[in-house]
Amino acid sequence: MALRLGDKAPNFKAQTSAGEIDFYEYLGNGWGILFSHPADYTPVCTTELGKTALLNEEFRKRNVKVLAVSVDPLDKHEGWIKDINETQNTNVNFPLIADPDRTVATLYDMIHPNASATATVRSLFVIGPDKLVKLMITYPASTGRNFVEVLRVIDSLQLTANHSVATPADWKQGEDVIVVPAVSTEDAIKKFPKGVKVVKPYLRYTPQPNID
Ligand code: BEZ
Image 1 (tube, rainbow, N blue to C red):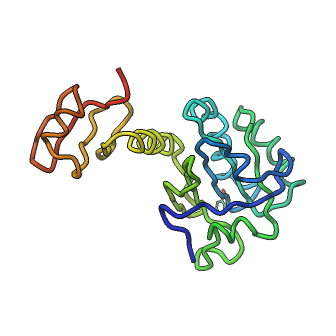
Image 2 (tube, protein in one colour):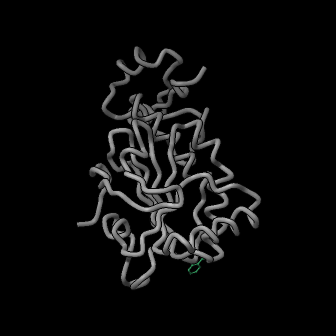
């Protein structure tokens, strides 16, 4: 059955451009991103991997390990990574899984037969330190993902994992957040000393609690 939010992310061992990896060991106690690409030496994928590599410091700051997957074999990955580094002016510094037998693609339901019988779609999973699936997004082959948006969602996931808040539409780090419905306004006032703005009884804002 397909994975859903809150499910345990399946562990696997795989050959990658950085040697054999056990997924859980690679993630350690931090956060992780596992994302698939239709194929090596394709233009949109080239820009996606390049952009992810350029954002490496942002992922590192958030304690997120990145792992890419493509169904092409390792020798193909090696040449393609050189092209990505050259054309995207970066240094791909995360492993790229070689998944020719589609073990990882199948575990994570990354092949959608009505989109393509053989290639993986652009799936992206964010895995929490508890190894549960926190975010799943799926894009078609023709549309590159927005990795700044992925960072934004990770900021929200990491914030809401530790505080009784949710983040409104288009929220960005530093902006006001929403008090979750499970917390009464009376309790919210005690819990959030920076203040609570009640717009409606069900719509209450507070300044982001984990920053000064
Ligand atoms: C690409 O990554 O550029 C791509 C792959 C498959 C279909 C269309 C674009």
